[in-house]
Length: 199
Image 1: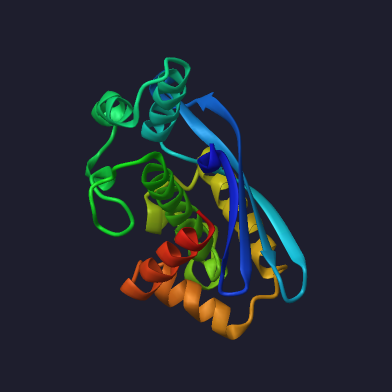
Image 2: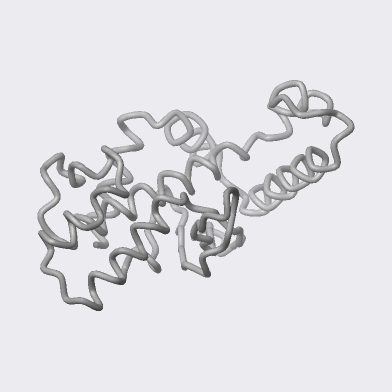
């Protein structure tokens, strides 16, 4: 399925995704883990990170796989997976009812990349926004004596350092900080257009 592997271009960055596995998370429920590669095409700099998608998406993937094995027609497949979907799947990228597999895949890719890109955008100025561990704990409600909080803070700093290695231009930084992170209409339109070009 194209949802499991692909790439798009957005503002000079190439976002590649590849489903690695499903793993158990909280409450022994599975979520999908993706390998994400982000490349600045101008400098050919690349970084790789893992991204954990939602439990709902893992359940949808499993149901789609079952429906394929049993040769469900699309309408039956849609009705079969509907109990595991939320309202974000009522319409395709053109705001019409999803009527075929391509529309379903485009929407799944949209939700995946929306999460990936917003996550990426949140770390561009991590050090400016969260300058110290104490500030991080106060801001996000962590116990300052918690090893878990310390590990999370370190991972956030590592991700921010990776992003710096991409050598983003000022225009790229501003786009991802101001448009993507805020999920503006401009960003949503750009993302949908790029997905529709490819898929």
